[in-house]
Image: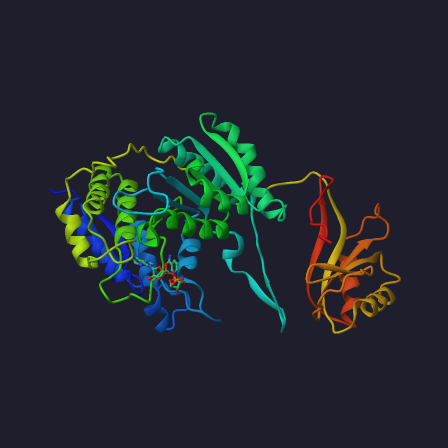
Length: 480
Ligand code: NAD
């Protein structure tokens, strides 16, 4: 009896998606590897049918069965109502790690040719601003919540080191904006610094994300693996793809404990969709990462090498620099198929080992504190009063409260106690109240009573407790 073929869920995607996905399927089939493809719908067509997540039930069931997906780019509808189908997929299947490798490719001329770039961005894929938790606090002020967990940081740091070990890499940088976002971005930095000594064979270093972008443009060869938060990683990986030839060449893997989704870094490229012009390399190399993931290392190497040989031979799509007669998507695909079995002169196969994922943690992960104290509360208020007038009214309303008004900020700047600086004000204030008696034991009843007093006169939209955990202040001080 012939063994059952491994099934892969295919999401062709929007724009150039079907063109590049078909190219990848044709090349993978031509290797003779024992896989079977199950095509499912997602993205624009699903949104048109009124499915607000962009992912139909059948598609979800197929992914649950097959646990491996090769996908084309999905358009994100702009405006209110629909979510990003990409974010839904990542969240639904908790593909928490996004691995985005780039390297110098033979025949692909760039400003960095000859510098042997080989960089991998390992991006946290679930949390951060891309959770898309947003509110209009007032008709004129929007809010986005950046939630970062210790659990999420641990998982992505461990994945970055596991990946570095599997590929025999030498260094992992952690890139964050912890100088400004001390608690959120700082949590990734601290977790990284805590875990890094557990990987003594790998050099580890923290770098600020803005300097990292600068260094990537100046001396990119100093980087090997870079681990970072979700939005930083999204931006940085488009930058690294630009260093090695552009989005048309950048593959990626979204890794979770149960499901892995392989896709190009690029989007649906509506400007060239349907013209048989798209460069399929990124999607085809994502297909090679997928084959490696399911244990088909030989087929993965064959696909990768055939792409490299094709590029080396000067066959180029129109997105490459210095192309006179560009090959179409289908011509390029046929050339790759014809080159299966050949080995690149300039870039022979690399050695890969299995990536040993950190074990899945089940249940609720708790980070506890022995001692907790409430220090105060920030109340967000909509008001057209000037800061002095607002402060006077708030002080009047709270004379008998255990909380006293400490400061008011507007667009992040302190406007009470009075500052000499003239800032442009909006009708949205953060009013910080702190306990008059710092040794006092107060809690929710006192906060609710304060909110009642303030709310009787002002419209409030949001509150945030000011807490201390084990004597450490668990909130940010105001900047200025
Ligand atoms: P894009 O990546 O689609 O295009 C940026 C530029 O790169 C365009 O000029 C495009 O022609 C070019 N390009 C991209 N891929 C190419 C390829 N394979 N060959 C040749 N040229 C290529 O980015 P965008 O225009 O900002 O986004 C378009 C849509 O894609 C948006 O709806 C966005 O939300 C979505 N998107 C989806 C994903 C995903 O599914 N993972 C990722 C990024 C963007």
